[in-house]
Amino acid sequence: QVQLVESGGGLVQAGGSLRLTCAASGRIESSYRLGWFRQTPEKEREFVSAINWSGGRTSYADSVKGRFTLSRDNARNTVYLQMNSLKPEDTAVYYCAVQVIGGNMWNEYEYKYWGQGTQVTVSS
Image 1 (cartoon, helix red, strand yellow):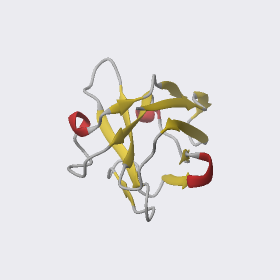
Image 2 (tube, one colour):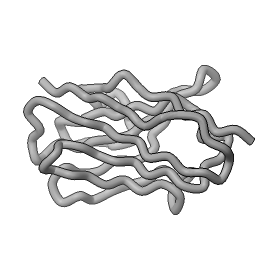
Image 3 (cartoon, rainbow, N blue to C red):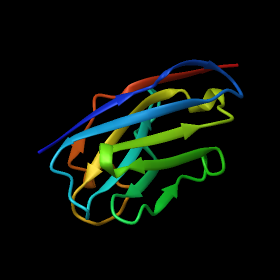
């Protein structure tokens, strides 16, 4: 069992930055992958970024590539999503999730554990 808690969301002006944190507790296997997704009332949940717990390989959606950076602290079981040059279209509830069996990192249905989400609002 894995529990995830997101934090760091808030209100920021366009062009600003936020850092989201996902703290994981429970048994984290080296084979796991941790992903970030976001959702608005108007859109389905979409993939943002993911990192392999072992090795630290990262992947990003095209919409955030070059602006967002995902990193991890294995000793703290924590992942950080640094979001720079934020745009109003980045406004969403951001969720972290854990994929326990390797597969399509973009597919939310392949993630087993989810956090409660944190709201990010970017004003224009």
